[in-house]
Length: 256
Length: 181
Image 1 (cartoon, helix red, strand yellow):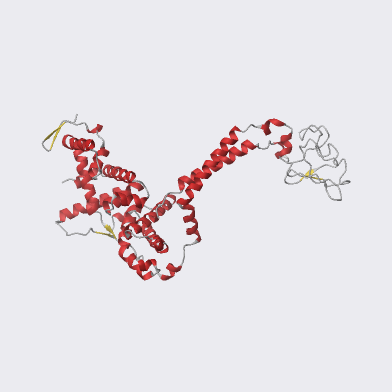
Image 2 (cartoon, rainbow over the protein chains, first blue to last red; image 1 turned 90 degrees about the vertical axis):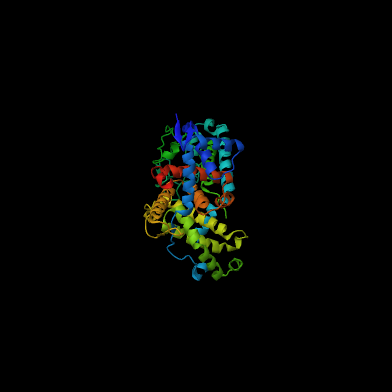
């Protein structure tokens, strides 16, 4: 293959196996090693396609220098005094600050720290999730419920009414200050609240209605298990890793 | 330049006049859109004026080209989010003929055809390759200058130029006769 007579020479090369990049380097005066130079010389002498490629690249390079039309600028770019005294807008300052290469190390640190957090979270023992199943229900709502029942507020037969957040029980039948909030899943209800009044059984958790209580309407969050520390670490770490890694990719090095 | 660095706007505007054609030629070839390039060059001169005190010697041409290329990069990034029309200006009359003594009409026609073909092919290669080729082949900067301007290594600059030229040749495959005697 390749037995072609070009420019009077005898050509035996198989062009497909030749590296065009080497010819391109030779055509742009890149420094070649003696071995590379010898290879190029041989290719140019024996392979018509390599010789043509070399000639085309040289001709294109010359054309880029001499044949490209000179674009005519559409306007004058001199800066007027009123523009000159005006500083960059807040948006320019912000984008310049955010796009600056100085933030790359910060982003990389965030990325690395996030990865570390995620790994730490993954290897943490899941103590919280295996400790006490009944405590899961309560843990989701304990931050809402404040045992503040007043003596005499509401009766033993009062039906709790859930407010719109679904976590707080309010006695609407009593005239005085309401008894607000009970730790629904707490194994130890507040001493001032009779057992079972607010759907709270002494030992059964919120899901145990044997005490005659009515579960608060809309308390669906009470049925969901709360996240443990490991999950939080993994989630947060992965988020930091993603944000930091994305920022590293986006923030490009820009010479000033 | 010293006067400009001292806050003399008139002195800076003399620099603008001296380099605006040069900068616009670079940016429009990298961006491929005249209006976007004009905005980028205007931004570049404004940035240069605001940061003129950061100029610490060296070629003004290189310093300005670096700022203009950054502005061109911003333009290209914005254009990726909001694609614009194709660029018919490569064909229109606003492109001045290249300088140099006119030769015979046939040669001139061929030369114009080569110029149009090259200009169109330049828009088909990657942005990085185009920037390197415009700076090296069209504007005549050397490898180290381009490496400094674009913030990449010397090897990367060379690679972009070599691969970009090969890509150009691929794009011009059916018009290569224009470049052969």
